[in-house]
Length: 149
Image (cartoon, rainbow, N blue to C red; front, side, top):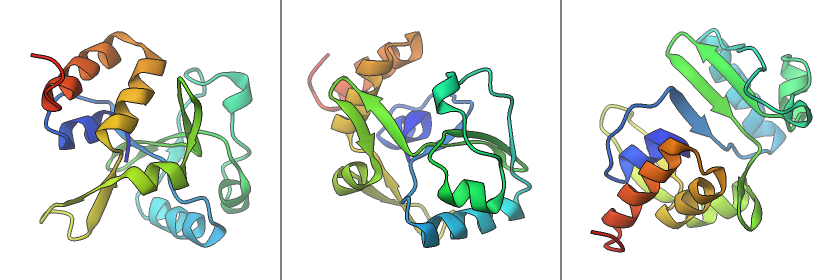
Protein backbone atom coordinates (compact mmCIF):
# COMPACT_ATOMS: atom_id res chain seq x y z
CA UNK A 1 0.00 0.00 0.00
CA UNK A 2 1.19 3.46 -0.86
CA UNK A 3 -0.41 6.92 -0.84
CA UNK A 4 -2.62 8.59 1.74
CA UNK A 5 -3.58 5.45 3.66
CA UNK A 6 0.08 4.52 3.97
CA UNK A 7 0.81 8.00 5.31
CA UNK A 8 -2.04 7.53 7.80
CA UNK A 9 -0.67 4.17 8.92
CA UNK A 10 2.68 5.89 9.50
CA UNK A 11 0.94 8.20 11.96
CA UNK A 12 -0.35 11.25 10.09
CA UNK A 13 -4.11 10.95 9.75
CA UNK A 14 -5.56 12.75 6.76
CA UNK A 15 -8.32 12.32 4.22
CA UNK A 16 -7.69 10.57 0.95
CA UNK A 17 -9.78 9.76 -2.10
CA UNK A 18 -8.96 6.06 -2.04
CA UNK A 19 -6.48 3.28 -1.51
CA UNK A 20 -3.36 3.09 -3.68
CA UNK A 21 -1.50 -0.18 -4.19
CA UNK A 22 1.41 -1.58 -6.13
CA UNK A 23 0.62 -5.32 -6.33
CA UNK A 24 2.94 -8.23 -6.96
CA UNK A 25 2.82 -8.42 -10.77
CA UNK A 26 3.05 -12.21 -10.97
CA UNK A 27 0.15 -13.63 -12.99
CA UNK A 28 -1.11 -15.81 -10.12
CA UNK A 29 -1.29 -12.81 -7.79
CA UNK A 30 -2.93 -10.58 -10.39
CA UNK A 31 -5.48 -13.34 -11.02
CA UNK A 32 -6.31 -13.44 -7.29
CA UNK A 33 -6.55 -9.66 -7.24
CA UNK A 34 -8.93 -9.75 -10.23
CA UNK A 35 -11.10 -12.28 -8.38
CA UNK A 36 -11.15 -10.07 -5.27
CA UNK A 37 -11.98 -6.99 -7.35
CA UNK A 38 -14.85 -8.87 -8.96
CA UNK A 39 -16.45 -9.37 -5.54
CA UNK A 40 -16.56 -5.59 -4.98
CA UNK A 41 -17.86 -4.70 -8.45
CA UNK A 42 -14.65 -2.95 -9.55
CA UNK A 43 -14.94 -0.83 -12.66
CA UNK A 44 -12.55 1.70 -14.18
CA UNK A 45 -12.97 5.41 -13.56
CA UNK A 46 -12.59 7.86 -16.40
CA UNK A 47 -9.02 8.31 -17.57
CA UNK A 48 -8.64 12.06 -17.15
CA UNK A 49 -6.15 11.66 -14.31
CA UNK A 50 -3.61 9.64 -16.27
CA UNK A 51 -1.24 10.54 -19.07
CA UNK A 52 -1.88 8.67 -22.35
CA UNK A 53 1.16 6.39 -21.90
CA UNK A 54 -0.24 5.20 -18.55
CA UNK A 55 -3.61 4.13 -19.94
CA UNK A 56 -4.17 0.43 -19.41
CA UNK A 57 -5.28 -2.30 -21.72
CA UNK A 58 -9.00 -3.20 -21.73
CA UNK A 59 -10.42 -3.99 -18.29
CA UNK A 60 -10.79 -7.72 -18.76
CA UNK A 61 -9.30 -10.55 -16.72
CA UNK A 62 -6.68 -11.19 -19.39
CA UNK A 63 -5.89 -7.51 -19.87
CA UNK A 64 -5.65 -6.88 -16.14
CA UNK A 65 -3.36 -9.86 -15.52
CA UNK A 66 -1.11 -9.15 -18.52
CA UNK A 67 -1.23 -5.36 -18.53
CA UNK A 68 1.08 -2.93 -16.87
CA UNK A 69 -1.10 0.17 -16.97
CA UNK A 70 -2.35 2.15 -14.01
CA UNK A 71 -5.94 1.35 -13.03
CA UNK A 72 -8.15 3.82 -11.21
CA UNK A 73 -11.13 1.76 -10.08
CA UNK A 74 -14.41 2.43 -8.36
CA UNK A 75 -15.60 -0.39 -6.11
CA UNK A 76 -18.49 -0.91 -3.71
CA UNK A 77 -15.95 -0.14 -0.95
CA UNK A 78 -14.54 3.03 -2.54
CA UNK A 79 -11.79 3.97 -4.92
CA UNK A 80 -8.74 1.80 -5.54
CA UNK A 81 -5.73 2.78 -7.65
CA UNK A 82 -3.70 -0.20 -8.87
CA UNK A 83 -0.27 0.73 -10.21
CA UNK A 84 2.52 -1.46 -11.61
CA UNK A 85 5.09 1.07 -10.37
CA UNK A 86 5.42 4.55 -8.93
CA UNK A 87 7.86 7.32 -9.67
CA UNK A 88 10.50 8.82 -7.43
CA UNK A 89 13.31 11.27 -8.18
CA UNK A 90 15.51 8.21 -8.80
CA UNK A 91 13.13 6.67 -11.34
CA UNK A 92 10.56 3.88 -11.19
CA UNK A 93 9.95 2.01 -7.97
CA UNK A 94 8.50 -1.44 -8.66
CA UNK A 95 6.81 -3.98 -6.41
CA UNK A 96 9.95 -5.89 -5.44
CA UNK A 97 11.78 -2.80 -4.26
CA UNK A 98 8.76 -1.44 -2.40
CA UNK A 99 8.01 -4.83 -0.80
CA UNK A 100 11.61 -5.26 0.35
CA UNK A 101 11.41 -1.97 2.27
CA UNK A 102 7.76 -2.29 3.33
CA UNK A 103 6.50 -2.21 6.90
CA UNK A 104 4.02 -4.82 8.15
CA UNK A 105 0.91 -3.52 9.87
CA UNK A 106 -1.57 -5.83 11.57
CA UNK A 107 -5.08 -4.45 12.03
CA UNK A 108 -7.64 -6.56 13.88
CA UNK A 109 -10.37 -5.19 11.57
CA UNK A 110 -8.62 -6.64 8.51
CA UNK A 111 -7.56 -10.02 9.86
CA UNK A 112 -4.48 -10.17 7.64
CA UNK A 113 -1.24 -8.21 7.46
CA UNK A 114 -1.01 -5.08 5.35
CA UNK A 115 2.35 -4.15 3.87
CA UNK A 116 2.80 -0.40 3.57
CA UNK A 117 5.55 1.52 1.85
CA UNK A 118 8.39 2.53 4.13
CA UNK A 119 8.64 6.12 5.25
CA UNK A 120 11.74 6.59 3.08
CA UNK A 121 9.93 5.24 0.00
CA UNK A 122 6.86 7.40 0.69
CA UNK A 123 9.09 10.45 1.04
CA UNK A 124 10.80 9.65 -2.28
CA UNK A 125 7.43 9.28 -4.04
CA UNK A 126 5.99 12.43 -2.54
CA UNK A 127 9.08 14.50 -3.31
CA UNK A 128 8.75 13.45 -6.94
CA UNK A 129 4.98 14.10 -7.17
CA UNK A 130 5.34 17.49 -5.45
CA UNK A 131 1.62 18.28 -5.23
CA UNK A 132 0.29 20.47 -2.41
CA UNK A 133 -0.92 17.41 -0.45
CA UNK A 134 2.44 15.71 -0.98
CA UNK A 135 4.31 18.66 0.52
CA UNK A 136 2.05 18.49 3.59
CA UNK A 137 2.63 14.73 3.82
CA UNK A 138 6.39 15.27 3.51
CA UNK A 139 6.42 17.58 6.51
CA UNK A 140 4.33 15.12 8.54
CA UNK A 141 6.46 12.11 7.57
CA UNK A 142 9.68 13.96 8.32
CA UNK A 143 8.29 15.08 11.68
CA UNK A 144 7.42 11.47 12.48
CA UNK A 145 11.05 10.59 11.69
CA UNK A 146 12.32 13.41 13.92
CA UNK A 147 13.78 15.21 10.91
CA UNK A 148 11.58 18.29 11.30
CA UNK A 149 9.90 19.95 14.24
